[in-house]
Length: 456
Image 1 (cartoon, rainbow, N blue to C red):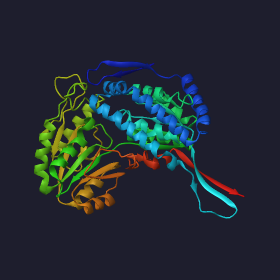
Image 2: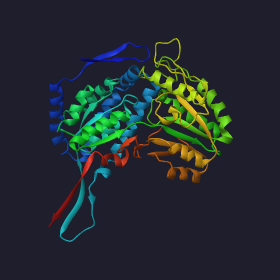
Image 3: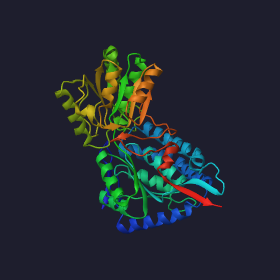
Image 4: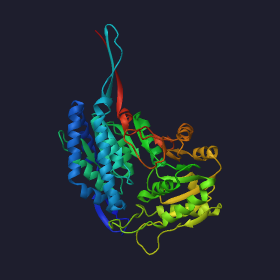
């Protein structure tokens, strides 16, 4: 069996790669387990040096990696290059805090006893990565997992398998071989790997239903799993917002990467006093997007990675209109192109029960609803089964703190959106997932607490 990767811009075959067979899977697990036994014995400082060497290998192939991202999933080359740089920044931050984060917790002295809490590695970490940010998503696991003393099996998305090869080539054969192994797997093979006793932890980024399936498989073995799943992230434009700044950033937060981000702005609530001006400015900005060849520097929005997403976005738009919303721009596939292009779409007066206000879109849709005040905004923002991020746009620090307290989401932004700071844990409420990546808390999920209780 071969995996064929289709370029979403011109529908040409990017590459055809063989799926792993049972023998290769078993050999990869054996090698990762044996590498773990040697790797976890090294001090953290040594692991840091080795991981930096892997990052340096990635740096030498920056052009090839960015190009492959664009070929496989369609984001403009400048955005792929930006993701590459951001990936390195995240990795360097996790290295910078590794020794402190992984150091043992020393308890207060107690006569006759030694007591501490070690942070022990889990073994082989199975990293199931998504395609929409094919560099960010795996690096959030690979680098902290290695620093913590684990080894990694990487199953990258079927849309972006070349990225998995780049990670293996950078980290797979350093001080110890087989620290990172890339595998091309079917869903059924993925389930079998999770069931294998040699796997100690599963990290998954993808759909809610995919996360449930992964979690059930992990639960059967009583191992833990980190799940980064969907979002339906709200933005609230308060009455005192800096309107020009806010519109620019909210529209970008909805449309960057063609809206294919778990933390993209997916629904917008605007204070009634600013609503008309917000809509007029948003309409002008959305008209300026240029859709086309992602290798053309003038292109500001590439194609969607998946052709079936076009129908989902069309259905969400039509559902909103049937429920009373007004379609001001877009709402359909871009005519006259083979690529998976969906027009930037602005929807006005979208009722709260519309599908687009309740479910993830993963495309360049901007549905907007006016609200009377902060209380209504909080209620609307919390009316969801997701809870990844939310943003409030205001000059008032006190108002921002109120939203930080009352809105139920893993990250609350003020005057910013669609951004990960590696010093903060990336986590979600409800159907947005379980566990954390990044920050010192990202190490906690890749280690287990071991209590050391010695009598002298």
